[in-house]
Image (cartoon, rainbow, N blue to C red; front, top):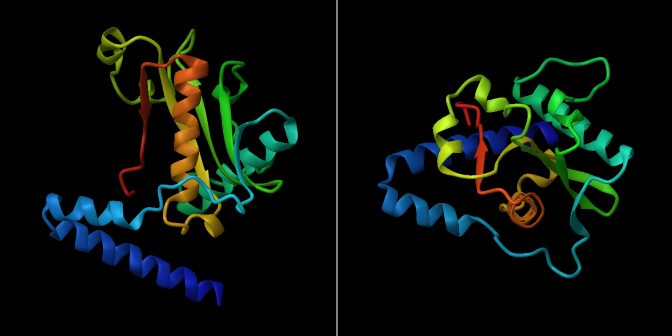
Length: 184
């Protein structure tokens, strides 16, 4: 049953992509916005959004990232089962999670540019941006549990909203950069 659901989901994604590519932007963008549920989770929802504050939550978040990256073909399996980068070892890096009760269902990391360069700087020349703006961060290691990814954007939107507030209120970032795989 789950395989059939996943196959149907892939067909719908491809159809939407083709439809939106064929439509003029002035029609496609409003249609995309109408499909999103950009509301705060309902009072009865068990979703919460927070900065990781313990090792168990960090391990669960990095495991979710690794599983998603493997499924999408971005990473090969690791012995630890974790998607741990040198940036996750930096004390300034923040890992934000969405939880349904105690289960971590989505995560992303905020990597401030400091002594070390941002991961994207290995592939792109960004110094011009940094001279124009002040403090910069990279949004990295984004993953949503497949069982929660089809909720019309509610989990992802609120996770990104939490990231935005952390960047403004805690980090003081003036510039956010994020890399997206070209196939997405």
